[in-house]
Length: 292
Image (tube, rainbow, N blue to C red; front, top):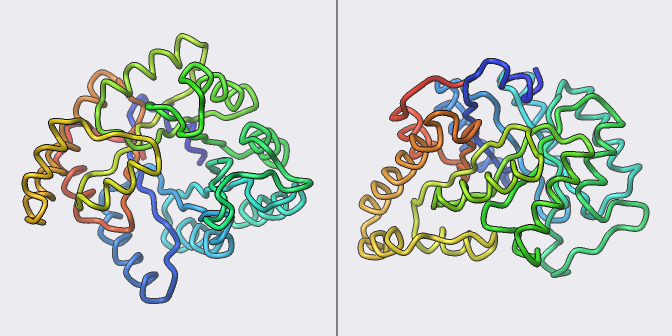
């Protein structure tokens, strides 16, 4: 089933994001994580695509196994980086043939050695071009990224939402946001998105704090911020892993209950970092049911 059809139930979705590990040991650990998350009955799970398409084959293989062997609805990430239109077409055909019906279409990050994004000759310069191509190739449900605090490379938030509207106008039917820690940022952005005529479901992206140094690196890369009061709390117990974990889970639970109250967000998407403990604790603590 396409993810965009799940919203017909009137229930919010809950989903988990994984990344393809580097080696067999990492894959073994990931499959244990999936086993622990499976009883939560996620609406779908997604598999990332690595900077510069560096995990292309692993993404295809992992997505196919999750969809067909593990029997969980899978959304495969796809980026523009280092791919021609023909290469993207082949990837889409492979995903379609493996039973994947959901794609998260992204411009993507360039390899670290390049620093800035450069369109591949014969490829795509913008994610809205990729969205249109995916829709022409097969009847995928195409999801795209939204940025409640603005894309790190965008000049202003209005222009950022204008770019988002281009993606929706070209066929995207779901928006999944970048992680955020302050729901007020999400609400301001959501209201702007709706005021500009974007009506598709919006899924809120969340990453519970489990390691202070790690989350600081993430927010620096993605342009998000940690609210000052929350930052003070976690920094005060930074050397106590259990205390950091508890604070991170409690904050995420509060976020989720607020976001799902009266349909403030259409779904919750957890950036798991291939771990399960925090996600299990949070989802089990939430009030309400989710679309499956």
